[in-house]
Amino acid sequence: MPSLPPSLPILPDPADPRLLAYLNLKLREIGQPGVALPATDGLSELVDHLLRLSREKDRALAQHLSPVDQRIQNFLHDTLDGSGEIPRLPNTTLELDRPGLARALSLPPGKDEHRSGILTSYRVRQGVLHNPRSDRRTTQGIFHVAEGGLPVPDDKKAVPTAVFARLLGRALQPPTDLLRLPFTATQTEQAECFVTLHLRPVVVPAVPGFSPQRTMETRFFVPGSLVANLDFVESIFGNGGDPHLAENDAALDPEHWTGHTGCIILAPHLNGLNKRELGLPAWESATERQRRDGMCWKKPDEIYNDGGAFKLTCRDANGTVVTLISDNYFGYCKKEVKTQISYSANLFGLCEEEHAGGALVFASYDLGEEFSGELHVRPLEHTFEEMVQLFGERMDVHPDGYATDRRFPEIIYVPEHISFDLKRQTVSWSRDGA
Image (tube, rainbow, N blue to C red; front, side, top):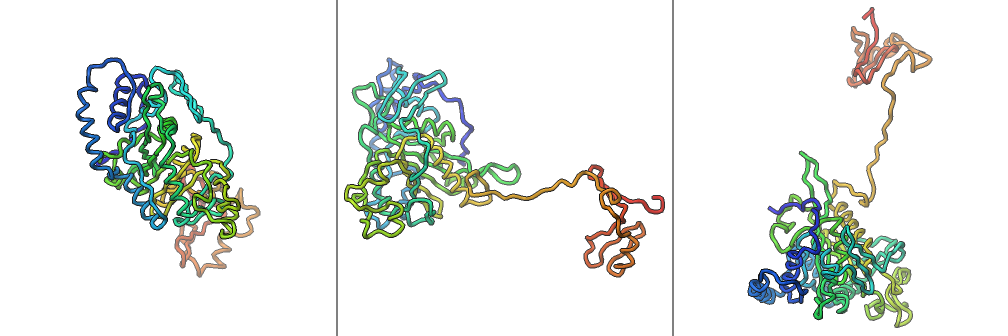
């Protein structure tokens, strides 16, 4: 059966010639150019036939997706049915099937710096330092939720399902410069592709002897230039391995799977799209909430969300969630994975997570380690004998000097000179010298 993802391993050296050769082979496998490397043992030439054969099989299986991607695609078909053309997840991507690949892909081999319009990466002694242009500190206007699934909270912006479908379609069609891999930035021919990462974040920690660890599955799709975001996310949540392999299919290991699937797509090119072209209604035709949320237009050239970054989520009660992030801010990526963990925790039940919506609180009191009737009950207004005279018909009095209630025998009546000792676990009193 599939095994759970191991703890975070020590990442390989991004400059390791074997790692670079492996990345070259993975790029060639999806029909993309690699980087020029020093002469090796000729292995690349020997595997050319296998790579060509693999590409032919991929062409024959052009509609084939990994099991987790197929679950996401099925959700999109069910959710977006009737909303126009349903976008399809890319089936040919550069899959980060082991830890450390994202870090190696973030810089060209032999270079210590790479700059793009939205990100600067530096090679440092500890690894790679990524400095995104966007460093957000506000969430105002950020959270958008597609209608048609679970209810949309009042503090979030409600987005028509058909508009989500159009935004998703645009997200999966980024411009060429956004698809270029930093790894091949110094080459005449540069690789242009989507990069994908498979995560298995823990939702339910294991309780030995009671319940096993359970994870959800989350897929990241990013244009090649944003591979640094996957380096960041992988360093926090680990790498779930190649999703095409049966041992990494969560559905084949239901004991350790919550049954929930997430998908995150980075698409900074969504900022600046036209509201009218996305299908949002005019002001006169909009509902009161659409007017409040800005999901309508008064002028034909109005921009969606005023051109600002946003996160748009589509989810349902069956446990699938797809989120578009129109930014490359690293914090949004991490927080979205944690949000999806909370989503899974709430649906799965019997588990708690820091964002899962609350905590059970029980009051507790410390009454001390000793209690004495003579010391702590003052004044002693009644004696045990007086109580027996008043309520003797309701209790059974025992020779040792205590009584039990006839109707509720778990209630015990004791003398006024009682002494409780929590350390010794005793309840005692004196009677006839004993």
